[in-house]
Length: 124
Image (cartoon, rainbow, N blue to C red; front, side):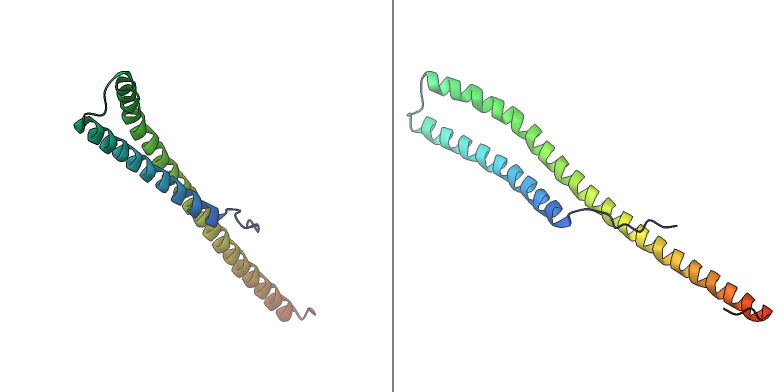
């Protein structure tokens, strides 16, 4: 007997989540680029000096170190979500084909029984 329940998966939410992961990853790239550009401009103009400059450069190095890991985690999450959606679609397709196969087998069995009854003159 096939599984008669449909796979429960919110494909619209999947698309939204993947989009948000990709947007967040892109935002990280843009933020780091913007920060680097701002610091370069301030340094070139001679307006970026002192304790805060040192503190910022340490923080920026931490960001440069952590951003790729965070970006990769977002990309991996987007891939995992997409894989889950593909698996859900594949499972739904499998269930539907199993239902069709079962219906065809059931119809063939019913025809065979009807044919046997007709040959034995047994009323249906």
